[in-house]
Amino acid sequence: MNGLRFVAKFIRMCTHMKKLWHSTIALILILAALFIPAVTAEEAPTEYTSGDYRYTLQPDGTAAIVKYTGSASILSIPDTLDGYAVTAIGNEAFRSCESLKNITIPDSVTSIGDGAFSGCSSLTSVTIPDGVTSIGGLAFSSCKSLTNISIPDSVTGMGVNPFIGCENLTQIIVSPDHPVFADIDGVLFHKPTKTLICYPQSYSQASYVIPDGIAAIGDRAFSFCSSLTSVTIPNGVTSIGDYAFVVCDSLTSITIPNGVTSIGEGAFLWCDSLANITIPNSVTTIGEGAFSWCASLTSITIPNSVTTIGENAFSWCASLTSITIPDSVTTIGYGAFSWCVSLTSITIPNSVTAIGEDAFFCCASLTSITIPDSVTSIAHSAFSACESLTLTVSRDSWAEEWCKDNGMDYIYSDAHN
Image (cartoon, rainbow, N blue to C red; front, side):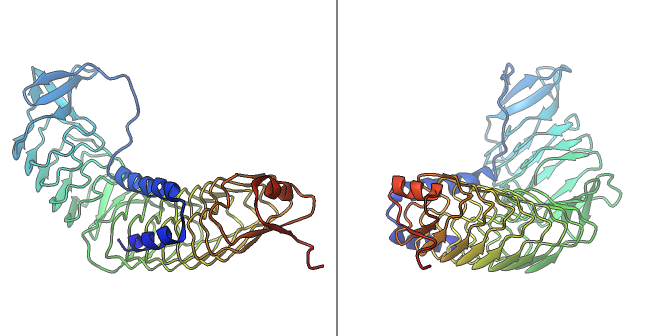
């Protein structure tokens, strides 16, 4: 990925290797988590073994497969285990079964769990029977050999983009009369919520126009679509989901229309060709890591409507030179602008009361910031590794005392009067 080119530059510019290591590991974990569903901790039910299958019994007395331990390449899942009808394939039950090439799911199954077949990299064919009513989030993630899949009319529920990382998936087949889902030019939508669920990453076109009438871009909907250089979002869209465009590393520009109120966690993470973006006045929340590692982004204006900027929202934006924070923001969060090594100018408004840990960590080009009198909380590491930075503060202000206590260079705002 192009963003990795900047790592060497960052290492040369900063000596705080422990924090660099922690930041890099955090990014790797975030990307890994895109393919692994979150599992809620619950008391584990009793497991039973039947051949290559481990299963649990559900309240209705039917079996849910929780783990396949075999190594078959062609597999027909049995419709009964020890006399119990198999009605569910549990979360991650076939995860990373790399030998599987063809699998038949029995008609008795009604649900496919989160990440059920994730990482089955050799899987080329799977038939979802008409009895299935729900497909879990990331159910077929990283099934790299899968080229097509049909969603039967019986499916009424679907989790977060089940097909993320299916880099050769070219066809998601949905009947025109499907009551819940729609296939428009190969892109999967959820009708009731007007949400774009999956834009297949195998598509090679450079630009895409989201159809009018869509209200939301779902979590991970465009993840890893590296061919896209531009996406047109229509008026009417109100939310951009978590990791919606993560690692769309050829995306150079995108316009967010008025009406969008939230930009999700990691929404544009590692879009390292993104040179400009307009955030409309309707946006109130910029999620954690929303623009992290957007290495080509040179400037951005945050509108007055924004009240929340998440942790690491603009971290590792290596080309970002200036930014203005609106007077609607009260807190600059953890790592918000860390590793913005080209940042030379930032304006902090009088509304800000707190500057969090590592907020400007390793902003090596930053020479001056004025801290308004409204600020009454600054984390010890807020300006760590900003070797050229001198803060401008008012005489006898809280910020002056903080500078003295933390060995930070400062000058008075009336020094030239």
